[in-house]
Image (tube, rainbow, N blue to C red; front, side, top):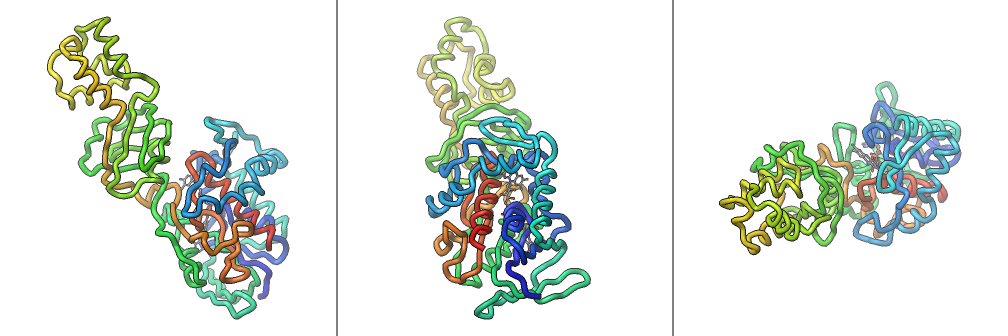
Length: 389
Ligand code: FDA
């Protein structure tokens, strides 16, 4: 069979590309269903974009690569697509847009558009072999009862990153890109909880509070959650993308307050209260108790000098920790790193080594913050490729 375009991976980017790439398109996926990450994302409602999406919400080795595609297919374009197909949505917080109904509405929208565009979607289909004969890509596709050689002028790598192997994630895009001369920036789990091997936070599991978290010069203000294994919550997922092994993180547990002033004020008002009670004015009570126990200060608030209160306040505002690691690919929402953007056109997503080879979505070394940015990158990069095909 000879076709125009073969797309590998029927996830967010692959489906968006198939829906717009024109006639003669075949899209394959080894999973049973298309768009599985869309389906489970955002607690089943898919945080499909962000009102405030801009280039500053993405990182990768080339800090400019993503700009062109994001500017040409914006969050407003995807919102317009949702509106045109009467899929209701709402802003939850910080510009994050979610479906009012189910995330599967977006999967249905994209598979519907793919079918209407005349593209053929084949599930439970794998790539057994791939070469390029100087004109076309020659791909051997296998499924339970079929083995077929497909010749395609264009090949789109849309198999995503390595996060959540249980959901079918593989490094296929990296292998193929390397085969065609591209380099791969070491893929690592991102938007992922931190673990602490000493189990120090187990007693605090379930405690949540707003914090400012910082690592390697990147800081975020959002909620943090103590877990049995360590630290999670949006703020931790955000900084995890910038964290390298053995690096420290710094937490400001009372970002909106001047803890020293507050503790002095409490001492003046009621010096007889316990340290844990006073800390309870700034922190959730279980955490206040744990911090008080760890500092092991003797006596009540009135017994503490300004120097001691200053030390306590500094501890709340600047608590440094070194995570043992992260929960890894098992729970990471995305992959940082991936196919280097060095030899990929930022306008079309086409390889500069092999004409007709396109790489889109999470497979590339472009990673968005938590908050709908990774889906926007999938939509924008897919549209850039589709426009060129
Ligand atoms: P995606 O992973 O969507 O698709 C890749 C496809 O390729 C899959 O269908 C897979 O089966 C297929 N494939 C892989 N290897 C293959 C092989 N060897 N052969 C054939 N097929 C193969 N982002 C966001 O913006 N808002 C959100 O709310 C969330 N929420 C969220 C929750 C969870 C739990 C996860 C894991 C991730 C998110 N994300 C997110 C991230 C978002 O899901 C992700 O960035 C996009 O799905 C990436 O789109 P891609 O199309 O690049 O990959």
